[in-house]
Image (cartoon, rainbow, N blue to C red; front, side, top):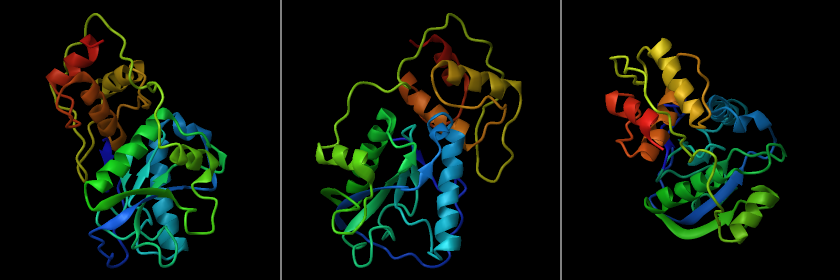
Length: 257
C-alpha cells in the first residue's frame, strides 16, 4: 500500500482529543460528494491539496476535531492517512461511528465521478490496512444505515459486486530506456520540516517518472508528492521502497522494463 502519512501531506494538528476505537465491525466507504475537478486524476499534487482542503473544511466550517475519515484514497491509488487506524471517525453519522471505520474516495457527484483502477486498488488496500488493525470483515457504503447517496452509484455498485478489479492501471507498464544519465551524487529525500532538495537532478528524476507514466510535475522540487511517487515506482522496480532516490533506484529506473 502506498501510504501518505499525515506528516507527508502536512496535516494540521487535531483541534482536541480524538476518541480511540480499538475494534469495529468493519469499514464504510464514502466519497467527497460535491464537485471534484477531473484534473485531480492528472496530477497527484492536486490530491494533496484536496486532502488538505477537506481537513480545513471539516475543522473550520464543521468545527470537528479533525478530518472525519480514517483514510482517504486518491485516483492514483495513494492512501492518505486521515485520523488513522484505531481512531473513531466522524463520518458515518450520529451513533454509527463506533460500528465502522471510514474511508473516503476522492470522487464527486459531478466532475470526477469514475474511479480509476488505481483508486479501486487503493480502496482495497485501505480496507485491508484497517482490517489488520481492528476492523472486522464487514465492508459497506455510507448509505447503509444512514440516509445519504454516499458513496455514489458507481462506488456503491462496485461494492455490491464484491470490489472487483479489472486489468492493470496505467501506472504499471515501464518502458525500457537503454542507458541512464549519471547519478547526480546526492540522495534525493523529502523530510518533513527540512528544506526540500531542488535542482536539475530532481527535475531529471521527475521527468523519468513521467516517462514511466507516473503523474508528477517536473518542477525540480523533491517534495512529498515526489517522494510518494518514488515509493510506488520503487515497488515496481523491486528495490527498497523508502522514497529516497539513491544510486540503485536511479539506475533501476532507466534499465527496468
